[in-house]
Length: 464
Image (cartoon, rainbow, N blue to C red; front, side):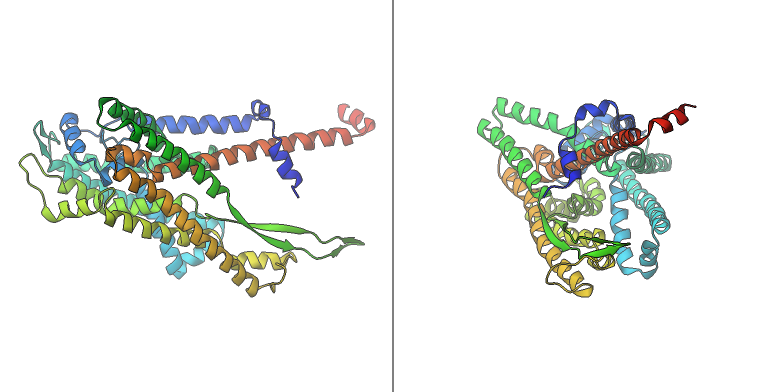
């Protein structure tokens, strides 16, 4: 039985978009914010020799650094002011969520509602600045140690360069954090996810064009190039199907008396998404993989004379894109964060308490603790499937592309992780647009009903 709200949502006339002025303002604000972000990825930090750094990046772009560059929208290869991107904020969010589950004071703050959430968000911002400062300082030291055939990467090394680099990179991360929050509040969609989405989508057309260029030159077989595109299409369809999948638990409401009337009991469903964590597990997993190896990637890069730290080079090689250790750690982190974030966003005990409060129950299950245990049992089982789905999407294309002549730079951009983020963020944003249109149509219907319900006398009274 389809509800009236679902029928109205299915029959939305998108010509009403021209009348939804608030939605238009939100979309234009979001687009403007993303344009500002893209412009920032082309502004280099001061004191860098662009030609020398381009040579260094080309030598080190295979692997983790290439993935970092993808999330940063190409800012790393240009060493722009947004080179750290939003990754320090994501790392800080991971740490704060873990601490919330362990620390009683933070857990109490979380239960205080909106005020507690604001306090935790403020702590997250402070931790973001701290992490970004450490990463920016490590990058400045790594840049100073780089030597190429075109000369030193840093034209005037010293404490002034280090200070300016730290201030610039940390300022860029803080600005993106603020910009993402503004998009969430005043725009459409989740601002942080849209920033990552914009960086990935911006790199996809050039990656596809470069793949076919290699095919034209003979470096990559034509059948492999078309096979990669076909694989991308299959993965996108699979992601859409799995993201919409859900398990519906039947909820029964008994008859109840309201005043002098007896209200008939009805039934509804409690929808449990197969992937309740969304796109968070791959982003968190990638962030944790990038965090310890970013500085190592710079430090381990050998200079023109063939130097370098041997054990750092070995670590970077083991954690490189397509390597068994990288895939194993990536899969473990995805599965862990799938369960962890599901536990964060969905509380079975709270859901069971709300059902008992309003008289709802699951047929055959006793209300209260037993209902919470049953919901947790079902949620755990479907989360297993969701975690395996996320792991398959993120690793299977990587396994296939890693064993083909396709360069790893293209494989990172066209792989499952980037497609999962792009498709999931698009679906969430479109759903928010539809909800705004639906709310606008409801407002129109309410106004029409009020006008029809007004009597001629009342209308004359209003005119007077």
